[in-house]
Each structure stands twice: as C-alpha cells, then as structure tokens.
Image (cartoon, rainbow, N blue to C red; front, side, top):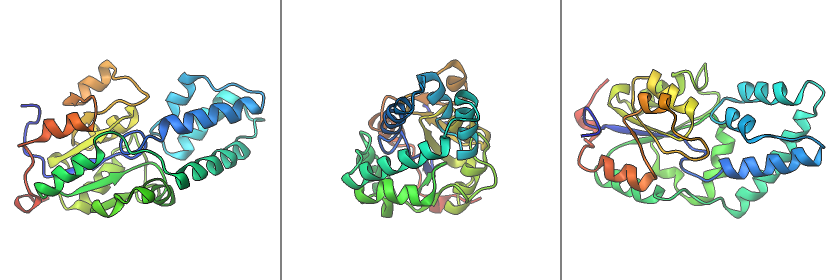
Length: 229
C-alpha cells in the first residue's frame, strides 16, 4: 500500500496542479522579458515556482539585476494573466474526477497556495470548482510561505484534521518540501519541474496525473468524522 494510514483530508496546491497556469505564466514572462531586451532562462523560472512573492522576486532580481524594471514587468504579466483567466484557463486532467471521488467518500479538502486570494478567485472562479473546497489557504493566511510548513499546517487546522492524516498534492519542489515538513503524506504530480531524488525521498509516490492520484487513494480514504486533531 502506498499510504501508511487512512487519508482523512486532501490538501491541493493550485498553480500547476489544479490549473494549467505555470506554463501560461512562463510563456507570458518569457515574451515580455524578451520585449524588454532581456532573457529569462528556463532554469531561472523553475527556481521561482512554488515560492511566495518576495522569494520569487529575489530570484528574478538576482538574475536581471537591480536596474531591471521588475515591477513594471509584473504589472504587464498580471494584466496578461487576468485577460487569459477571463477567457478561462484549463483545469488539469483529473481535477473534476478526483473531486467527485472525494465527494463520494466524504473527504474534506483544501486549496493551499502561495498565490493571493484574489488570484485564486480570478484563476479558479470561472471553472466553478471553488465551492467544492472546504477551505482556501492563500498568501496572507500564514506567517511563512513555502518551503516552510506554515501553509499546510494552516490548511490542516482549518479542515480540523491532524496534519499526519492529510494527503498533500503538489507539483513544485518547494511545495513538496513544505508539505513534508508539515508531516503530511505527500504525493508529487510533476508539471514543469521533474521529480528529483530529493522529491522521491520526501513523497510516498510520484503520480502521472490526478487521475493516477485518484486511483492511488481509492479505498484508503476515511471520512473525517472518524478523525480528530
């Protein structure tokens, strides 16, 4: 069995896991950086994935230098992303199916993201799936962002389930580090970042998709009423 104990709650990352935004953000940033006469290498963008805004900004400033108009770039990137979200950004494969399964077995779930609440509403609002989550934990809800455990500990507390009884689903390295530090059972569903040896050590499985995760948890989820902090 992949999991050492019953799953009593599931905590989902958002970007790159629930919705296909990481590639969208990358492509927009690469284009707008090039328009400013600079270059954003893939390895630099990958280092920014899963970080809170301040840490992500530090990576960008370290690459571009102090004179690069980063704030102006982000304003343009945000406008482009907002326009894309208004049209609708695709959910990742298996999202609705895994939520249907969690409904059927009465397992609560939360979103745990480094993005803001406004970004969550903008990104996932058009899909109609937000009401299917019992809690949304976003930037500003915890003192320290990923890779610290605070976001996941906050999600567990809001769900009323002990962290050790939660399954955390993440696509980023920093998200995996945070969930593992929180003591959660952790599965990586890679998006733009590959599964490294460190990720394999910190996870119970590397899943190909949320369809794969749904198959993994079939039969090992237990209603939250049977649990307690």
